Amino acid sequence: MSKEQILKEIIESIVSLDIDKIKPLTETAVQSGIPAYAVVMEGLAKGMDAVGQKYEAGEYFLAELLMAGETMKEGMKVLEPYLKDAKREPLGRVVIGTVRGDLHDIGKNIVATLLEGSGFEIYDLGVDSPPEKFTSRAAETNAHIVAMSALLTTTMPEMGSIIQELAKAKVRHKVKVIVGGAAITDEYSKRIGADAYGRDAVEGNNICKEWMKARAM
Ligand code: B1M
Image (cartoon, rainbow, N blue to C red; front, side):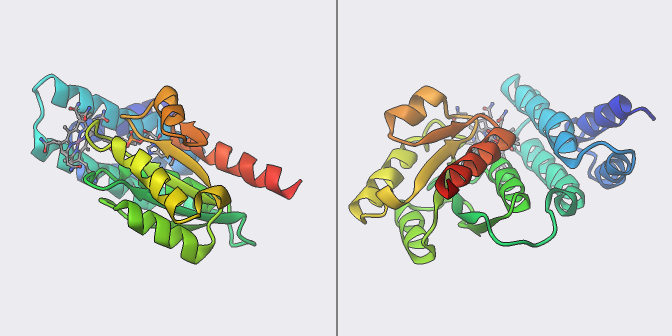
């Protein structure tokens, strides 16, 4: 099978919710030399986009969304070891979470995996995380970066609340704040006073690495 065919089958397995096929397919992908990043971005994530479109078109319902999420996670289990390098000195500390009221964690988990792979120490708050949790964890860990994800238009404002909470707790000036998720735009990130917006996991990871490089200089 060509690399293009393998990626196409991965997309199709997500769309057809074929959880049994995803593990052998992602294994085949890495064994045939497709970089793990590419398997995530060009395979699994594209499949999830297609599932989202089917949901919007009324062809899929919540049960299918959940199953697609589980199928994606099965693929990620195979890829995670390849996305993480051998242990080294932490590049920096990142507190990451999905904001309050929001249960979407697939994108956030990809961002966390890539950051960990780059050498960051990750404090993952999980989903539905209130502003106080972000602030207290950032203070306790002396974090360099606070990273937030939101997928719903209704939960986007939580990001602004977290930034305000960080300021109230006198932590804001010590951390860089990056936001991302399907609901977020660059313009919105500026409006709420974030330091950056990550369009996707790779861009988010690169921004965080650049910040640590700039600190070291
Ligand atoms: Co829901 N959901 N969902 N959902 N879901 C969306 C987001 C939606 C767009 C679907 C639609 O209507 N087309 C819609 C939101 C509409 C809106 O607000 N504008 C929606 C809705 C409405 C809902 C419910 C309200 C449905 C209901 O109950 N009626 C409900 C809400 C529950 C809640 O959160 N309180 C709900 C529930 C769910 C499931 C639980 C079933 C499931 C989530 C499973 C899980 O995450 N464990 C689910 C899913 C799977 C989706 C879609 C189909 C896929 C999301 C996903 O995982 N994408 C989604 C449709 C879509 O987005 N097209 C949809 C793949 C993932 C890799 O992408 O998370 O965007 P994403 O992450 C990307 C980038 O955004 C970026 O990097 C990632 C990789 O490149 N990124 C960052 C993300 N965070 C970042 C942080 C950064 C930097 C980059 O720095 C910090």
